[in-house]
Length: 228
Image 1 (cartoon, rainbow, N blue to C red):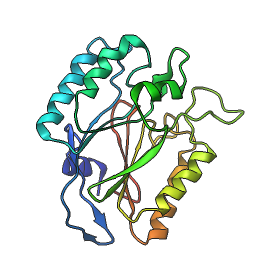
Image 2: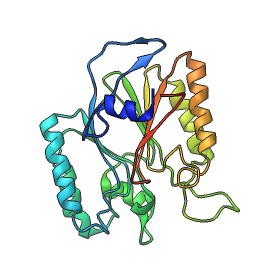
Image 3: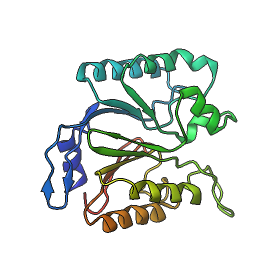
Image 4: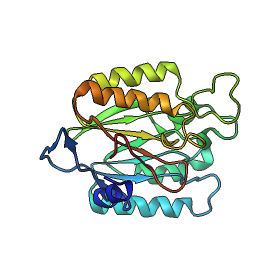
């Protein structure tokens, strides 16, 4: 399936997403999982960030999404952003965050941002409606002699990802701020991470990882794995 077709069929161009779940060659019938995605709202530089976030929250309330998730570059952990974060927290259902590279601007640490957002860990996974969801942190420190902003997934997180994928037989969706498709502007060791996903698919005997959803490029947050 071409990426554009997948996006149209899954509703990815809207605020609420229904994922078509395919395992082996047959479609497993299950209740759809609806979730709202927002990416790169950039509260600290965008004048209308509050308005856009409120519009998103209003929409997902109407859609009655199973959960909402922001894909990074949300806001730094400064007191001035408390009202903005309060808009996010008015959603009464499950809420999830992905750390972006600009969420630590101004010298903040990832842990400070995570605590400000009430995020359980820098990377973690959860299940909803028979689907496994994984949140990655693409902001690990670049190994020497790499330079530039941090856009790496280090060994510890790689091992966690391998183990997490081994623990589930459910179709899996990956969330990352930095894309796993563009090496020049995404996760610097994206080939290593994609190999982990491909190996998990091969070991399972079916396409366990059905898609990766990313922000950062400000254009498209769909990454294809094994032709999806």
